[in-house]
Image (cartoon, rainbow, N blue to C red; front, side, top):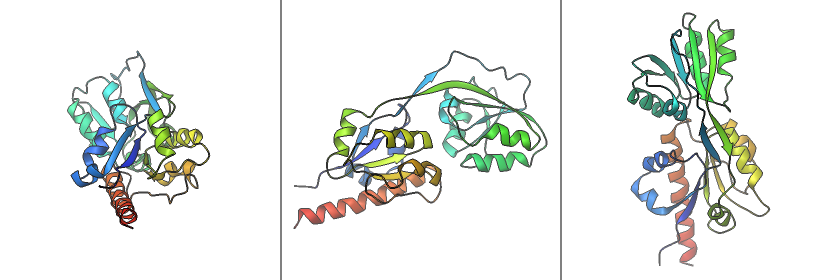
Length: 242
């Protein structure tokens, strides 16, 4: 009999978890048992930004791209390759400006002063508007959606109390905080955090080493998860043969 699949608790909002699974190799996908447990619900706001008097928009999430107006070939400075690709698909003249807020701010700070609008959710990080304003730009922030907290599902709760311990990828500090606040005594997991900032709320929790990819990209998160899955499968297989 083969070893049990390794649970992986997917905490991102609905509609965004398939992208991570698609980045995994077929061998890794065979080893993993996906458990959907979004800790944030994306709630669109019935608002429409006025983009008539600006030079460009800023996108730091794919959710903002989906809820923004069509691009009509207007300029969009984007964080992350997938957000950039989605913006292009929606008609924006999208420019990849790094893989995190710091890289975007550094790039735009070197440009001539402009008028930008950051299309984003209620909860965001990086203080992009403030930092770019200090660099000489005019930056407005327009909120397109709320991010409401959701509890862990019963399936996720059961996985945290069972063995093998589930892998838990975490993509934002707020999601990591919500996950940490949900943990109960004795629950164990294998944390994979997009960055050190994301790792903060769960450091020292769950009884396992923190894993952080070499760069904050979906592909590197997938590579890190694959290495963990292969390692756990080997350990579980060895135990099964004892």
